[in-house]
Length: 226
Image 1 (tube, helix red, strand yellow):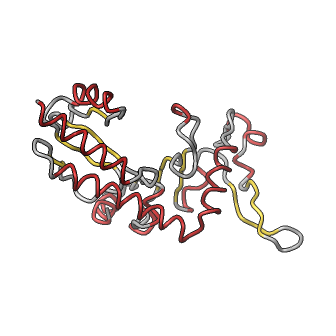
Image 2: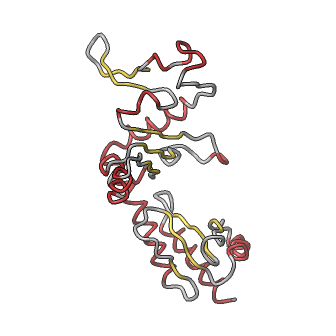
Image 3: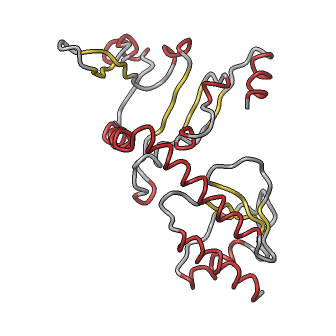
């Protein structure tokens, strides 16, 4: 990533990165390798799936570009008693001041969802977030190691990964997912358009070892029967 950032900057362009929010608790954050703009999805930070939303997006940029950043910006300050407080800042960007020329145009607020992620991170703390990230990383790699040992399956080597990885299956992912339902398991995402018979899988801190083992066993049974 550092090399990519250096190449972008050498050509006079901005370097934009997408990063897994939870992985930042153990991986190098984009700001440290020179990213100018970073986007992320905050669902993993204590927000339930709820059938697809609502979630909360994360958008960050260097101080140089903050006045062009869409959305509302919250800054940290102190109240009259010297306690830490958070307020909307750079008000001159707001729609109630600049009207149609505003860079902040908020119609639907996701402040409640953002509050959920704030409470989640505060409750876990620095060490808790690190532990959650490590559990996610370890469980995903444990699952990958089990699948790599199953005849007919292979883990696609895409380099370092956090919680998601691709697998080549002995049958089409569509057929495999249909068979997995017999085991009361919802399979992975079909990515056959990118990897032949490819399936994208994910394991996180919420998956138990028993669940991971059961999934690998089901894959082995289905693979041996075809």
